[in-house]
Image (cartoon, rainbow, N blue to C red; front, side, top):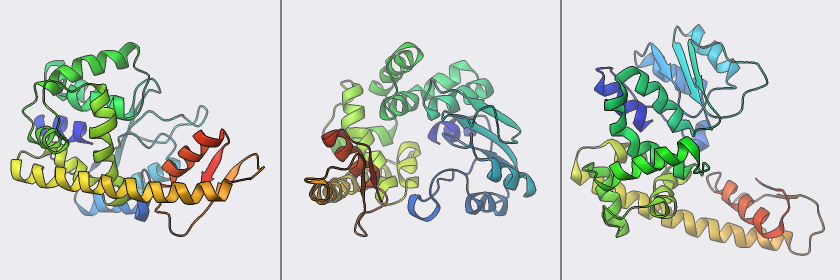
Length: 271
């Protein structure tokens, strides 16, 4: 979203970012989001990291008079595609890198390269294999990142005790990304987008602190839920674990399932 916002704005477009609330809307295109776009006066929707199987929502967008460009990296539904104005798709890149490919065509290679720090962040955070084009993106993006003047990045570094010029894929994957990601798990991901795009150092600092605090809360909630989940599977002879608790936040159940799956080597569902 930051890549699309920054790139399209630099080309003179009037852009309004929209990120669905995880608990209230779920993932991807929704009626609520599309109606918000129409009511806000938008004429074009560009998705990022979603939409390749949004057949019903693509039709709904058309019924609202909205053009739709889908950029995504998820698997297609066989040979079937949503009825959109255009589709930009690759499973070899992360969703943000696919969006970058669109932006590069619109604003040109030189301008687009200024956004490679965001593309590197996304490629590492989405755990794409760092080979081929992904390795090139991260190599060039980390160069940009370590020379950055973006106040959002600098606030994130300062909060985490990191030094610009010494940021590698490790710092991105284990420190920066979890802080940014926690906002979408427990609060609203729009604040992480604001942090990446703001030009106000004071606002950047407040948002970086909020992201770090939210990540600490996410860690505590995850640890507690994982301990509960371990008790549920203790002594179980099931070939698949299906675990549920009303106390678990929908923002962490994927983490809980992943941890139990790793520890038991069995497929796990957390509800």
